[in-house]
Length: 112
Image (tube, rainbow, N blue to C red; front, side, top):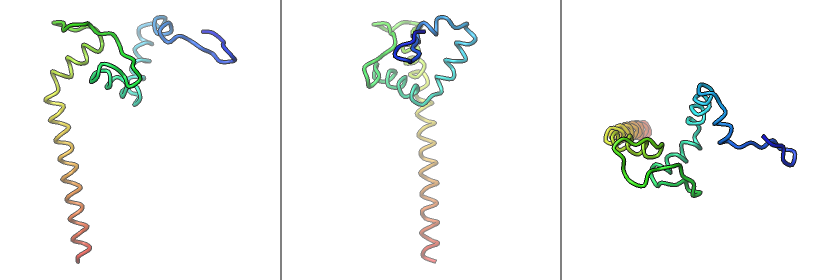
């Protein structure tokens, strides 16, 4: 940590390296649930980069058992993509059906 212009500044990479595994896991799990972080990670998984041009490490070619974060995430998502897409489509269809049902109920109430 450094004090620069009255602000405490620290290098996140150094801080993560110095945490004991239990505390690091708690911090990372908390951060992993943050909406902004989810957005940036999703951008990297889909496009390889965040909108600002940042990215995590990846291998240049496919690996039988990926170990780098983005490579692993892409592989796991690809393996589960059919199930994820099916769940999302079913959820959207249910929501649309519920909205249509409510619309027709209101329309019928207005006519009555």
